[in-house]
Image 1 (cartoon, helix red, strand yellow):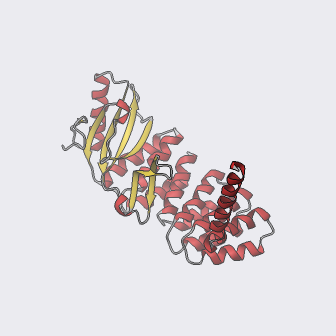
Image 2: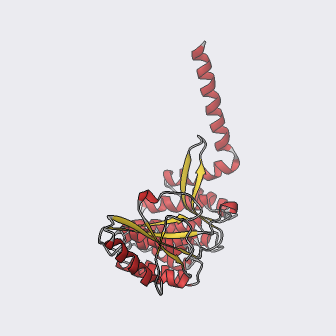
Image 3: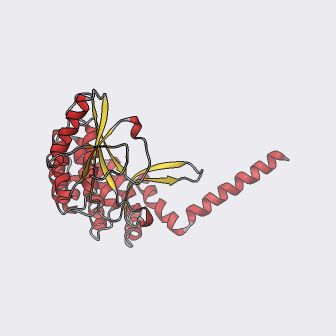
Length: 299
């Protein structure tokens, strides 16, 4: 069984679950205080995961999941890393790591479970996400599920969005569905459901805002009139502003003209100023004024 890193400990077994169980047995026998169990799975195209970006100050920033036209940053070698502590049988942490990046895995040993197909991976992850009681773990498991190249993903995420008791799982599921343009009808329904947790509804709206699906803007157009909570209305307007749909500017203009809420009007006008170049001109004017002020102080 090939390993992406020579330090990884290869584990044998008939299937993924058998290898995971064997890794846990080996770790207990070695009295490990903590360890990773990891494997590689098929990742969908046009996704970048665990990339590094350099900001304007030259500082490296780690980036999570990016979708769309990621170009040369597309991730093709991706692994699920499950962290277990001492004798626990459920993961305490879940990470998605680009296997082409060098890292020391925080000094913990890595038990390598090999390369598996999407169906086998999703079976394990769906089992783990239904058992976990840790919000952060559940959210990460959903993220891992969402980037698999498999037609099973949409159905699995939809089921988790409807039935999981964890807020992070429901929120993560609707966000991922929206982002990838899957089951937008369900995502819109969740966003407008006044009985759902506010955070889950917010994630649903943000997911739709990131979607490139033709129906995404129509969903946001309906939601801006359906949602009543001020915070969600603001999120919806921001989502419209970030949409790349060609009709987004027209929708913002129309909304800004008819709303009586000054904050919502301001949020609607921000992207319009940016599109017209007004925001850039204002920034340049502020920089010029700051330079003049410094010059005056020096004299």
